[in-house]
Amino acid sequence: TNTPLLCIFYGKLFLTEAFNVIMEEILHKGTDLKEKVCEWKDPDQLRALLDLDLREHGESHEQLLQRVRDVARYSVKTCHPRFFNQLFAGVDYHALTGRLLTETLNTSQYTYEVAPVFVLMEEEVLRQLRSLVGWSEGDGIFCPGGSVSNMYAMNIARYWAFPQVKTQGLWATPRMAIFTSQQSHYSMKKAATFLGIGTDNVFIVQVDESGSMIPEDLEAKIVQAKSKDAVPFFVNATAGTTVQGAFDPLNHIADISERNGMWMHIDAAWGGSVLFSKKHKHLVAGIERANSVTWNPHKMLLAGLQCSVILFRDTTNLLMHCHSANATYLFQQDKFYDTSLDTGDKSIQCGRKVDCLKLWLMWKAIGTHGLSERVDKTFALARYLVEEMEKRENFKLGHFVNVCFWFIPPSLKGKENSPDYQERLSKVAPVIKERMMKRGTMMVGYQPMDGRVNFFRMVVLSPQLTTKDMDFFLDEIEKLGKDL
Image (cartoon, rainbow, N blue to C red; front, side, top):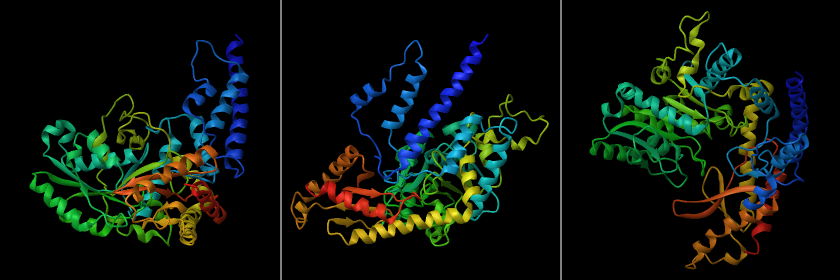
């Protein structure tokens, strides 16, 4: 009879001690500049250190705590000030509190009866985000990441254009055409695949030197699609491309979209947060003309993974009409409360994780003004980094919004016209990346793109960062690559 009570007691004890490990190893050491961003191990080493085997009998309390320590020790500390590798980084402690609370409450965001607080909270957060876009009315939902948000947009657009597709399927639709830039996120092609539209029907629009869509080429691609008997129905503009950080000319694209009767979506997963900034919101001028917007507050705002919304200008309940299945065991219409609060049928999921609390609590803590300052600081630090980079002879900047650059080792200086220059330059970034990972000093990503050989993409967004961190970054790149 005492066994269940003992299990609860030891479970709570383990949770308390494990939480202390998390606080010490991740939130204390993981944000300390004196500590490593990662403790790199090769896969075989790491498998042995973690003892990943699952066995018939459980382990002791101390063994389990060691497992927690090992996971913390060998994981990449994305909260570290010198983690520049992805479009998310840092930690906001109010948002983290929301994430912990969400996990502890362990509910699903589909009906008011099981998630009353979060149904109302999601409604308010979405209303505020739509207001920033410029819409007094509309719809929306939190999604598991920007890729899924983009897929929602495409699916709703198809239903808007061809409502019979819900019941009759693709047999009842013509060949459809999607338009997106060559620098847009790969989720556009994945969505076309998943929805059965096909990647051959995704027409790629050219971009200019900065990575922004060329409107004239969009018009040319629409003509091309029509010549192939495809119906243009969806254009995706990007506000903050993944690599270059480019912003497409939204007003021009909106004009073209309206003339051709197309749904205009904006993937603002990265750049949408500039709407908080009076200084930088001009970058998304025309965003209010879109039919839908993807926005990831887990990126520039630091809400924590994952926090993504799809917002709609539509007021005709397209989201519900397109996705509803009317499951009577969940969405009974004779409940004792307002059943319009049962929003779960808008989602393609059944169970849906609560993602609004972390953003709501962070927003409550620092306010709209604090979020605006966070965005402005991101841009200010990026400008500082560019200015300092221009003072150093071994750095070559790309003409991008994100800080993208090549490091030119002394051995390659003045050899730009050599036949093997590009090949040799392409090998620099991978070697520097390997060295920094094994040293654990910092993390920054690299990639080739459109005929350009490997270059670094520096992501600046953590509010913990200072100009000293930017200086360290430049010094460390030089230190790691000077002998190449």
